[in-house]
Length: 255
Image (cartoon, rainbow, N blue to C red):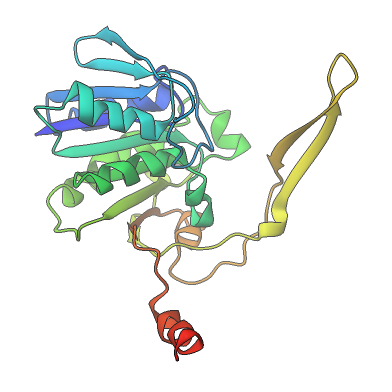
């Protein structure tokens, strides 16, 4: 089985090493094609206004001067053009990709690009708290539970244009309570912040940030599973059509 690894934290991110260790439990045919620098929050951006470069670090190891989407495109159309992967794994992201944050996520978007290309794709993220980041093994849950989560997903039938989003809770591996299949939750949109500052020349700049948030946990969501110490496994689809509204709109535009 040929596995392509990518991420949005960059080629040198420790989470990519964790992902490779997980992937090697299933195959020796591992390829890496990841952004050369961190691209967190890039979403499903495709670079169109400048060229991208493909840098080869070693056999089967490449970096792209672009987004996670660029990396998957380059991997599929240049690096592995004549021998496509059977599986694309994106991550392990340093931080959560839960609820509506998946719309910003470069990690999830890399898997989206794989799904669009017809390749089974899975995004993996390690949720963090200040306490878990300060630990000696901030990716411990992902390291220990990654293979347990992937094993059933590798051959599970999936519909076209779907992908899987996996999040590991911010606890020690021994404290993970299990695995839950969940639906996407939603955050409180008001949590966002825009921080204003001044550069050394006195000009204003703005920095987007996220305040700590309180969740109103809805049953069965990825947010609830993580809050309760479970690994969340969420199937996502790329068809964004709101089907129940089609009839309503059709009536508005009829005759």
